Image (cartoon, one colour):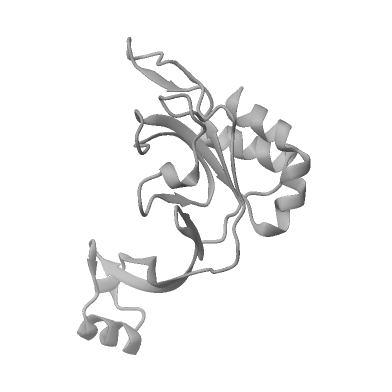
Amino acid sequence: MLCIFKTPLVPHPDMPGKLQAKAAAGACQEACHTQVAMCEHDPTVLHQKEGRYLLALETKRYFRGRPLSQEQETALAANPDLLLFSEIEEREEVAGQALDITPREVMISAACLKSNGKKMTIKDFPAGWNFGNGVTVGVTVPIKNSEPCVLSWVVFPDSNIPAVQASYDALRAIMED
């Protein structure tokens, strides 16, 4: 489930003339968890404009920012205690993805209006727009046939849809007040 909101902005304390999101993503996420429901945190789930994608992840190893060669992987497998590779970094990377064909619920706040005053829809987002998962706050989004809008969103697992629907007013207050 994807819930999209208009981001309230306040003057930036250190940069006169600049605006920033009123609340930080961490504070919004904590409030969502305590007042609404747990957000989506599964690293194998990614929400984009076109739908929910299921990701296949694989662990890749890097040494000084570069992927290990096949020879280095073989040497490390033969002797995992090699001091030469004491700075190995492991990263989870996407090996493949598939669009989940099950329907996805999208709720867009009534405060999300295009510059012509019409309500924003998911179709107004750019192709391939990535919502990720969890809570995202204060992103300037180029909206089709409109001025860019500063938006925030929360992604919830489908199992939490009833809780989100039941407490949508609290969620809206967390994200927009």
